[in-house]
View 1 (spheres, protein in one colour):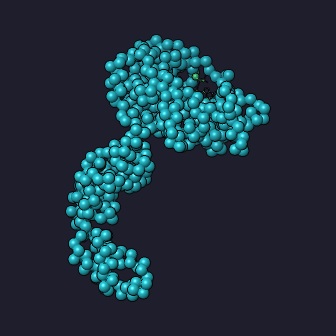
View 2 (cartoon, protein in one colour):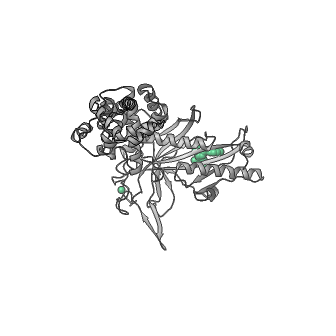
View 3 (cartoon, rainbow, N blue to C red):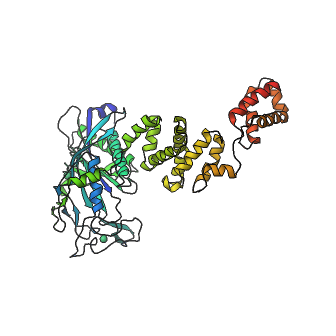
Length: 488
Ligand code: ADP
Ligand code: ZN
Ligand code: MG
């Protein structure tokens, strides 16, 4: 599609995001939410939908959704009720999902997404409500379909946005912001690949400048942020194509095929279910007091963008570093803990810490697919390593060498350095002797150097570092080598 044609239309996007809550037990019973148990192990009469059982609201589900509501500037309804959403499906033993319908607990909020030029754009949040997940049908057993109900009753929140986004980039930025908020709040692990975050994308197009929204479709089946963006791009082009050919966009649900990068129709909304919502008679209305709201408000940490900006002003690190360090809350916490442990809190030491975390630490995290706490590195040990470099006890080279030994080690860097005799050689006379020795042992190189091949300077320095097993202070070697080569 030509850029001119794309420019002629304006996309309008609204997202519906489901986030799985990190509670230990399910939404309305005490079964575990743990992933990976053997099929149907985490079940009980309540989540199996046996007659005569009664659901009880998990207090943490309420707490978590209120955190999310407050963090996204929502009104929190004082009194809200649950509703039954009725439909038949083999993975839904009760024949309905417990959800919220006309009284979502959070409503009329907004969040701000950062645009490419750094400015913020407000995206309205229509509502956030609580609901339970359904089970899973497993189709890969030949003719049989099996059902695993471990997921039935797992708590979800659904976050519905206003149709405020105007490009697939904005939709991507919105999802990134949602992920950052839920992970900072500690209410969801934010993993879209594993289904802890799921997104349905509503999209329409209209002629640029037009006031009325076009007919929307809903796109499902995306398992990564990037795929949401790709799905939107392909659906936007499909809709523009239809309109340009004089055809009509119809109200339907599209599935994204990630391999082909295209959307195709799943079912038209006209034949969609009527869910016959009605108030859930087995659960009490949820009431939220001002005192409770204050309590939950106090659990909300500084969020990513605020923390990034504070890192820049407080620690004088580049905005890029601050963005990388705060992308994950645990990593940002680690950075701040290690700063607290520094003996010498200079800008230089803080930047060195940031470099270590952005470099070696994050490389290990991605290689091992581990969180920062799983690495077994202690923040005070990393701080001590940086202190040892700054006070010239060890060289950068030695620090790099012993870094892997800090993982899962109770010995501090100081103890490791002492045990292995790695303290940096800064004694001028002994270094001078080594430098002379290196020159004496390399008469050919010396001759070439004197003949104008000045690049060999690095060779002499390298040989000296080697002779001292990397323990020599590099700046001292440099200046001594200059002196001695001059004399030689
Ligand atoms: P439905 O009746 O299909 O459930 P809703 O009005 O409840 O539609 O909106 C569902 C989602 O679709 C919301 O995220 C909303 O922002 C978005 N949406 C609504 N109208 C449009 C539109 N014309 N174009 C794009 N998105 C839309
Ligand atoms: Zn249960
Ligand atoms: Mg709706």
